[in-house]
Amino acid sequence: MEQPPGYADPRFPTHVCRLKKAIYGLKQAPRAWFHRFSSFLLKVGFLCSYADPSLFVFSRSGGIIYLLLYVDDIVVTSNNTVLLDAFISQLHREFATKDLGSLHYFLGLEVHRTPAGLFLSQTKYAHDILARINMLECKPVATPMVVSHHLSCDGDLCSDATLYRSLVGALQYLTITRPDISHAVTAVSQYMHAPTELHLQAVKRILRYVKGTLPYGLFFSPSPPTGLLAYSDADWAGCPDTRRSISGYCIYLGDNLIAWSSKKQPTVSRSSCESEYRALAVTAAEVLWVTTLLHDLKIPLKHRPILLCDNKSAIFLSHNPVSHKRAKHIAVDYHFVREQVASGSLRTQFVPSHLQVADLFTKSLSRSLFTFFRSKLRVRSSPTHSLRGGVKDTHS
Image (cartoon, rainbow, N blue to C red; front, side):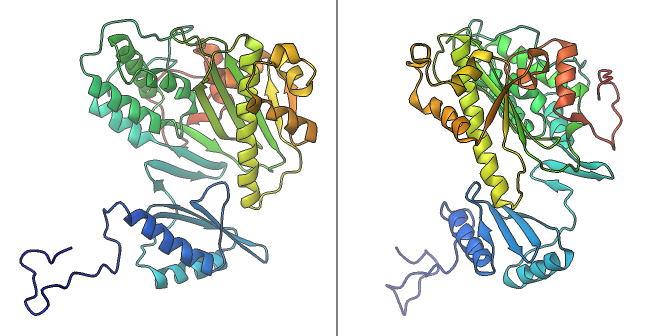
């Protein structure tokens, strides 16, 4: 190291600057900041969550404080106003922080409180995406994908691959409050390396659907956290290029949707039973993670989690270790769902296909079925907005 040009001290030519604080923008700055902030929280009595290292929980004499940290953005909430005010004052004394009051906007997520519950949306973010591609006046559609349509690698390459990747990346962030477009966004995300014109048309259809449902978001209402209910589904050989299956799940705490996923399976399944069984194992792993998170949040569950699947053979495999010939080729790590069922940590049950909510995360559906499942996900229009120029929807 050397003294910077123009700031050399002739009295001490061999001296260098001593770094007392991490400079904002350096690679090590976020780690240094997190270490500094988390050390303070642990010193005042907070515990770091095992499920999520950015979550800190303070519990004492019935009072609970939840703190969520994202770089330098902090969300704090508590069931005790006096305890919360005392902690915020302590936070001000330790760091140069600014109290923005009640949570209304956080990392692009809009928060609206109503007498009935909490509404999360990304209306402004979705509006900005449409404005960037000049689709604010486009004609909306009722579903984000054409019914029974599967994208493939065939077709002429897209003339503007950079635009395609930019739009798909923006839509991926939009799925935080819009689980109804998760499957469609997952489908177009698989062709980022070499998008075609057909793929770009599929992205524009998603944007047309977003235009018609611009003020939509997730609604959370107060409900007792009696237990977790998970839906698991798979579309066997849903990818026409690799013949791999598409897995999907959604998890409810009480009446509220708290986790969901739509993802292509890493290997080819030899039967629909195998693809459903793999999806069941992935869902079970997520349920266990959510259970750990709820434990860190001091939220007790009165009943063991229930996994709903519309494939009786997959449910049979999760209960019966005898079917060796049918399942001997399946990777060992997928069989841990049997151990969870045998130990009583999980319970698998059958659900009819017309009530399988996770079906929305594995394939494109008809308008009526898509609208029905969307309402079950509690995706609805904002109570503070009126839907103008959109698609008429009697289920919202």
